[in-house]
Length: 226
Image (cartoon, rainbow, N blue to C red; front, side):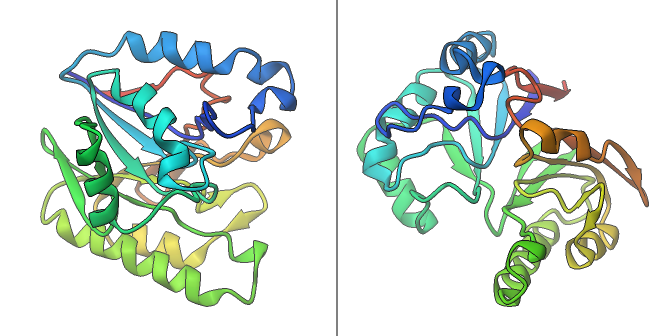
């Protein structure tokens, strides 16, 4: 039994948006994802940190979820900025149940327990991308805090889609929320290509930060702990 995480799979079995157009780093990426996930055991847990499918709706993303559900490990989904299929948790759970997809759950205003750890997360936000959209950031901060509070006294592993910290940028609101709780490690995605060079790897305050976007990990989920 082990805990793994990866972000930004950008699956596109139905949507015509193959990431291979972005160069050699993405060549054959769906086959590489298949090979990597085949190595995970049924008792393992995999956190998918956003941008899982290019599908615009749940129906358009169905083939991508069917592909993922074929691997028996438990999967926890975090919302990404390109997850246009995302809906209310009740609707997504009903959609999966209707199709007998049994391996999925969500990190959204809640937490999951893995051993002694609480697994918490939300999408996050870049205020610098849209300075007017303070409401979105405030909502993400509230979701992250709700997730942390659900953890109780457990040490926290945090999973975000957007990085709250990287070279040349910091999100004070998200970082302050992280600082106030016992977050041992924070994992994030979203950064690709040249932007990977701006990643923050290391300790901030008492939390260790790590990038887990799929192309950075060469499409093999990062093992976090047994």
